[in-house]
Image (cartoon, rainbow, N blue to C red):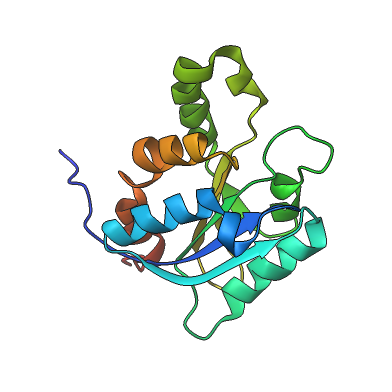
Length: 172
């Protein structure tokens, strides 16, 4: 049995986590937005929030609560081991299914470019399972190089299939 890549498109909430970025200086957010739009996805909401667990959680809740809710969420920044990096911790409050393979794959590809520093990344992904919704999320580093790698090698090739799986009703 062969699996075809899905051409499903979705709507995305894009959240940049940074204490210093602004709309004008959010280069990584711009890269993500451009790549998603080029592939036919819609940016439903774009926000910049500070490196603070409660601020990040509020933004995720807002994305999940919108009437025309996002079908997936991409967060960039706050995924390293710096003192203020807290994006992975912010997601822990929510019910979710971890997708460990995403972080493993991202670090594998990163190691080819940056060597052993790749192990310092806490890039991760999962499926939020709040209020009968299944919403994939991805947490990426904040650098444009890392975002480009994650989008091209890990997210864009599979996001359509992930959306298909999350939004398919179980056959009984």
